[in-house]
Length: 120
Image 1 (cartoon, rainbow, N blue to C red):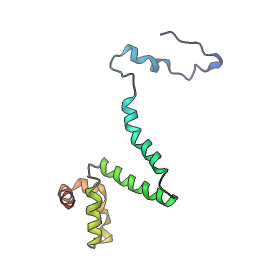
Image 2 (image 1 turned 45 degrees about the horizontal axis):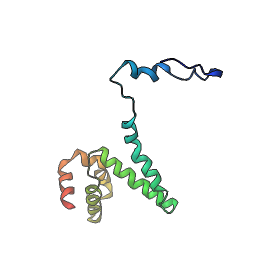
Image 3 (image 1 turned 135 degrees about the vertical axis):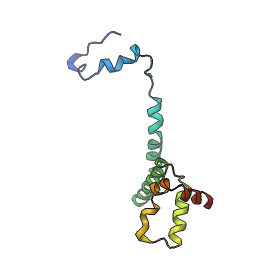
Image 4 (image 1 turned 60 degrees about the horizontal axis):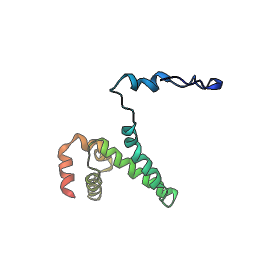
């Protein structure tokens, strides 16, 4: 490929080798679909959050979205987890053991996830 001369020194910030590397190496993909798929849920959530109704509603939405994402990152079922946690809180789970109710604690204890899955 031929480089195009850009007046005013604008060509300096362009990383020509990086932009044309896919020509020399067939293993490099030309598209960025994987990146677009990865950020799509973030974009959709941002658009959906516009309809939260209020600042307080948006904050609650953000907490729930963060909790769901944390569950997914820890391989915890995001529907079974809050169901089990709410049941434990209602049944008197002590505040001093609140760390046992965090998503990563469920990921470390498969027997807890088995119980959470039967609650649904």
